[in-house]
Length: 229
Ligand code: DX5
Ligand code: ZN
Image (cartoon, rainbow, N blue to C red; front, side, top):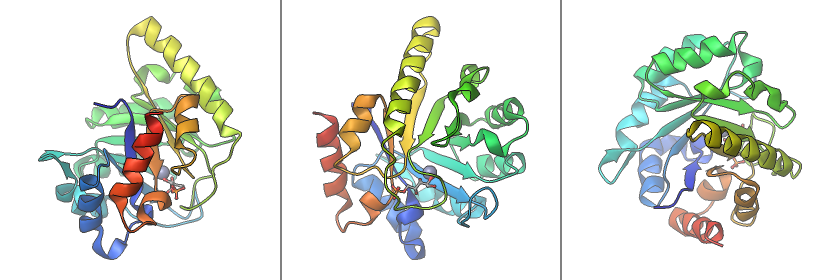
């Protein structure tokens, strides 16, 4: 039972057969499904919404049990989509503080809908957004690219930020006994995942690195081998 979670981003999957892609990647050893929602407003791209989440929900199972659907909202405004995603079967909903005028309200809305809550920080978003919010969060998602597109290169300066958030979450866990996940998203590949883990991440989003290859199991196995080093 590895503490590490691999969450393939279906942004790089074949949208013409998404149900099968979701099944295949979970069968290949993935833990969660990362679901990127873009609105052509907060980010310059347009992707998928609650209808597609609902459509993949029955396909997202692992060992006969529902697998986590990890919804990454890159939309503004945020709040009105949250009940729809909760109804569509999302388990975890994360959003960007820049996209909500009332961050505490948005986090509470997610929790009231029965979902876990995550806050997403872009490469240039300061860590003070974790002040007054950590108590309500299940996960912090650090972007290692600027959001909007799959297939971008990992920004090396984000490693230092991962280390800082790790220290903060460790301190918080010592004080409260509560574990908050640290997820990293953008440009994660077999050859850099070990470094990202060493910096302190425990949950890894990978889109193009997994769906860009023929054999998803080979990539996921190679990632787990790197994580074990
Ligand atoms: C970027 C998205 C990512 C992206 C990751 O805005 O949030 O989840 O799909 O894709 P790769 O792994 O290709 O960088
Ligand atoms: Zn994402």
